Length: 310
Ligand SMILES: [Zn+2]
Ligand SMILES: [Zn+2]
Image (cartoon, rainbow, N blue to C red; front, side):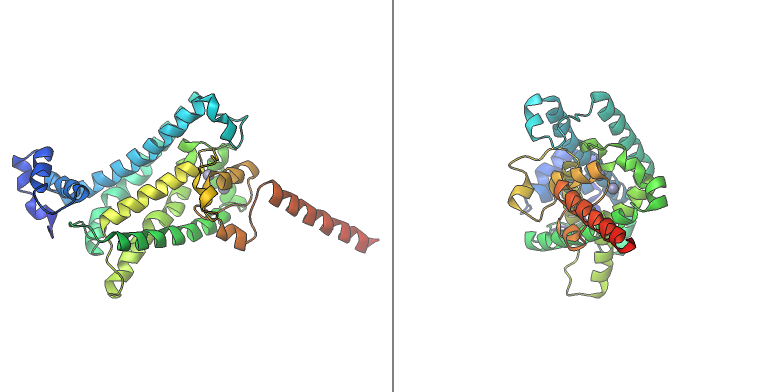
């Protein structure tokens, strides 16, 4: 419908946001597309509109997703599904963590967010409406989930080695029993390295699509949905709760909270973010069973060593 929403910027001086939205309702755009176009028309400045959109998406989706977990922590009924039931984080602990994460968002992530629109223009990432088909969006988001998981596994595992752990990753492991707000509680180097898995791959994809026309172009709305889902995944995996209705109960390769909670509990193994296959293939699964298996192996090794000495 609109190839360049910013070309309608003249409307912004005369119309309020609801008025623009009302006008767009008479077009064949769906509600979400109208909302999207109204946002860009209202601000009349694509750099500002994209920057603010990204900042708000991140803050609202991250903290918005944390709040239900915070409430659940305060209701004793849900304790039956808490993975480490004796370790309920206090209000003070959660509030301190929440403040630190927000401060870090402002310091570490503000600048890249504001530079994102110029990058989008360079890479032909569209902001126009209508949006691409849901099938294209689904395929691109599935691809991002897949590659991010491998990236996260690799770098998370590196962060568990010697100096990387001591000076970088140790901060994230402050909470042996994680909770939602702790998902992004990490050293700035870790935020940037692991954050590349989320933001970097859409950029790499868009860059590749410039020269490979068979790849469908990327839309900024698709990136927003992907980032939202990735934030939900990160917060949920730190929630500390494994319900009978949790996604991993229906999708066996989905990691879920149980997978990552054990990583925080044992400090070793279960390095992947969304799926279980990386840890299964690389034999780095943790948990009681995996721990017993490892202990048995090292005991056998030690015994055979002694036998050889004798
Ligand atoms: Zn770790
Ligand atoms: Zn964690």
